[in-house]
Image (tube, rainbow, N blue to C red):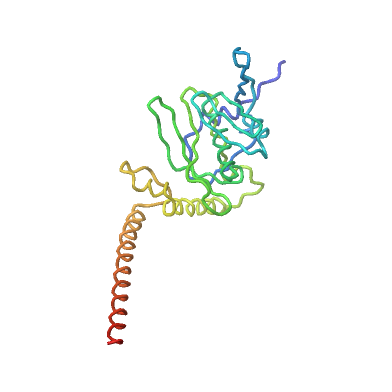
Length: 255
């Protein structure tokens, strides 16, 4: 009797996936390491370029500890180092993920040490979906915008690259979900109030969904902004009057 084929957990997870949630995600190296892409070898004799299969994980390991620069092109991603450059192709999801991880590394952000918070989505005319996150690392918002893409015909897209807080824990307490929610609420509110990308979300006329941030908070920020501007004008006026009063006092004293 033949060996029974084990169910594909990744495929099942894709089918059950209902979108990203407002939680503190972390990258899952095991999933990312297996995402397929191609290294494009360019021929110098005018012949046809060859595509060598590899993975996002192998590409990142090869580029580790190197000074890199990444350019995203329609045909793929070009990674430049001191020793030359390499071009990677493959699915939109795979090559864009490589580009984002390399770009973050160049900007001094460790994407695997950061927590990723989803906050926006958009769709192009050709039905490509973009999911946008802000990243928290070393106790601060280290990146306001990092995106991954999903082509409607792209079977390589795997949301499991981002794992939720309760995944991989050795022990989970009854109150851990509440702590996780409080942590997420803290960073979402900080994002909406202290970053340009977050405040632009609040100002958009299409009123996108916001997380752990309520309509009264938007009014509070708007009113505080008006009050702050008026306070600054008042302080400037008071300072001007004070200087004029001091000058008048000096003139009077020397008369």
